[in-house]
Length: 249
Image 1 (spheres, rainbow, N blue to C red):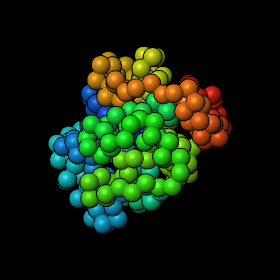
Image 2: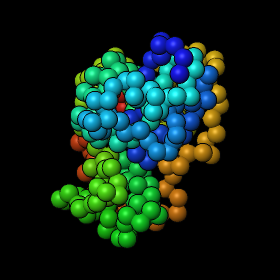
Image 3: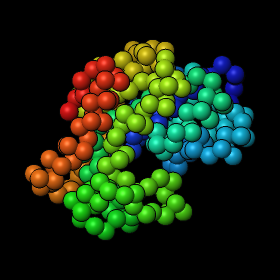
Image 4: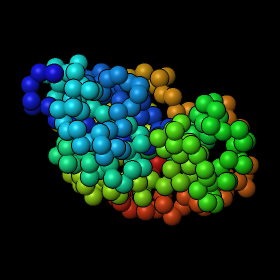
């Protein structure tokens, strides 16, 4: 890796919200390079021991391919759920650019269920799995997954998860919505400009690469859908207040 003038970018989540799509789009910008290999996600700032190895180890492990790009990017969706990750990132990186990508929390939960089912983490039907997460924490095997593969609803309480990042990096935390990213071609160049890069060099990504769809998951019963809407009502209101704008759902 040449030079010492790189800045850092963290795409921190949320899971099943199109972060892989976004990171690939950013990686295609000539002034950005994302961590490699990918997968796996680096998840360095979820681990105190990995963070303690310092920035030279971080660069050597994940950015040996980098040249003169302005931004070195790390996409790890587990970061958003780890309240210690912002402090670790600040200690190593100073003030990185932080990007959070969100989507409708019920659609996110359905996509999450579909992913967990396909990967052998889940054998319950959709409604049973989602409603179970309204109650106590559900058991999961940390040897198989860095975060719970069955936290379908609580993972969509975005206001709680964003708060530590916004507190640590108030000037460099950028929150986007998948719905707007896909619908409005100005959103990605706007983010690129906010990151201090040339928006005219923003590539046109392929929306067909988004892997966050609900696919062929069954539709929710109206009563279940109403219950879930009530569950997210307070968190959604706090998120809108934090961002100072209405949510796109």
